[in-house]
Image (tube, rainbow, N blue to C red; front, side, top):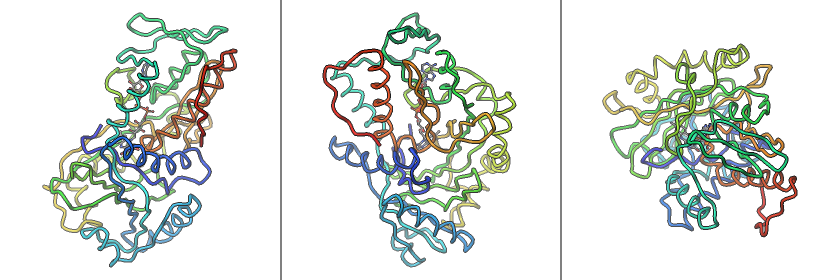
Length: 372
Ligand SMILES: Cc1cc2nc3c(=O)[nH]c(=O)nc-3n(C[C@H](O)[C@H](O)[C@H](O)COP(=O)(O)OP(=O)(O)OC[C@H]3O[C@@H](n4cnc5c(N)ncnc54)[C@H](O)[C@@H]3O)c2cc1C
């Protein structure tokens, strides 16, 4: 995780009605409330979406409609109002969404883990799931350290490895996971950006545009390029920290390559730029005039399973959960899964409880959680 905390997205750009949109919009508000309740560092700055040229205006207007459909507070800003909100940012026009910011998500996960422990749960780390036996009463899961864990329901949240873990249960996930790699930079000078700033994304392009966020420590992170994770994606489980990125299943299968092509093509276009500070500085100057190469240093980067693809090659844009006997498979939770974590977790828990009840089990007491 980034020392400056994780960006909490407003969710404005996700299609209304999707699980991704519902969980992100609600998740941003819940995360702010959770952090406030538990004394966890966070800021709510809002998200400024900017068009650096007139070409971005129709997309900006489209986002305004989308924001209203989500029930988000959205204001349209001209250059003078942009300068009031973000004095160093120059843009043709912008919208300010009144949600989103940054939070210390490591502290959020520690808090959730402590609550789980206090309720009698146990968390084991650094053990790979290597086999799953489905039985009439539930599942027996074997891990690489030789243990067997028995449960009514298996919840598979293995990110880039989720397709393979679903395969271990004998379930066909119905999708292939195409791993993408995000390259980030940081600004060496503090204070150039106060909150979250992003270029208006082009829905026709897999490239999300430049994204800037000021972390809790004042560092400004720049989300720059998204490329195919390529060779890194051919390995297997690498147990590490909670947010370790996994290598995903083989990319050589034809359907995956077909589906990866749109992102890959963009990736090829972005990849040389990603490794060139000069190109990043040039792109950044369109919204932050005066930024020089020396103002940039490499930031946190890694693979993220942005795209699960269907057999016909269609990328899955929404979060994708699949229920199976004694199992819930979380197959596609791309960015902003951190923002969406609380409602998404409740939805997964609701499904897991339904699966467990199907075995005849009834919990002694379950808080009646509402889901999204
Ligand atoms: C550089 C970067 C910056 C990001 N910034 C943000 C941000 O600011 N805001 C935001 O909302 N999102 C952000 N994201 C996205 C976010 O981090 C991910 O969407 C989120 O971590 C996905 O959560 P997850 O639990 O599904 O997967 P992960 O966090 O990857 O967790 C999956 C876990 O499963 C384990 N695992 C895998 N296979 C097995 C197996 N066979 N047996 C046992 N364990 C296994 C892995 O070791 C890992 O610990 C960012 C991602 C990247 C790469």
